[in-house]
Amino acid sequence: MTKFSVKIANRTALLASLLWAGLGTLNMVPTAHAAESRAMSPVVVELFTSQGCSSCPPADAYMNDLSQREDVLALSLPVDYWDYLGWKDTLASPAHTNRQRAYQKALGTRNVYTPQMVINGQAHAVGSRRPLVEEAIAEQRTSRTTPPSMHFDKQGDILELKVGASALPHDQKHATLWLVRYNKETPVTIERGENRGKAITYVNVVREMMPIGMWTGKAVTIDIPIDSLMAQGYDGCAAILQADGQGPILAAAELNLSDL
Image 1 (spheres, rainbow, N blue to C red):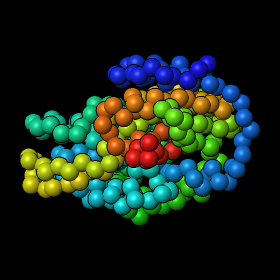
Image 2 (image 1 turned 90 degrees about the horizontal axis):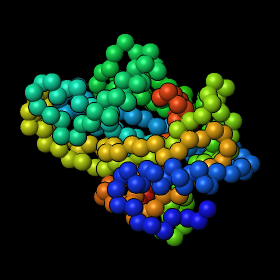
Image 3 (image 1 turned 90 degrees about the vertical axis):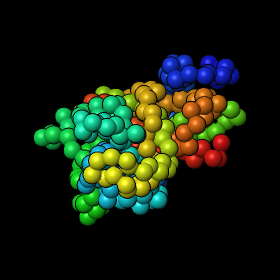
Image 4 (image 1 turned 180 degrees about the horizontal axis):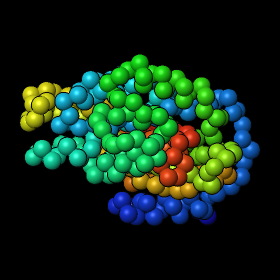
């Protein structure tokens, strides 16, 4: 199959093109440099937060520290269920609330809460409790099985997302490839509620998370048109490989869009 040369202007077309590209470039390659892959794949930390949550600012500040680390992919996902107070979080998305509720089921928690950090889809902690989060990150970094290799590669006007061959966890048949686009820094002066008057800079705020393919243990390359990737103006991009059913995150890769 030839690579894409048609410019795609909208999200629906982009998703369709990515899925088609992934199907057309599926192939088998041997797994290599397993230890290097394990070291390079960052631990994904997702913070479910809200402007209406009085205990969230310390967790939001902690996210700034986590975002500076090479061994962590830190993502902020503002939720919308605090909007019942009568005013809307300017960054919140119902998709983030749905993702957190899916984690509630997968992790067996009693309810959803903020600030909650989910670490690699396998552990959670109150986002302001740094020692607990650091312990969970360290455990994920040292105890997880060797992840498949995963990285972005620029080829002309095409961005290739490559995932290597590897064994799936014993209870999984496939995993979903998520393309995540986010804003690296979003300053907000909160105008209402208990955080009124506080100026908070939210980091790596997820604006779009879309499935772009399925991984079954075989190597796969998915072609992403760069002009479509840049169209929305987001300055952060990453890919996450997550076992289906909102399961464990098997691998992740971050992309510096300024290098494109």
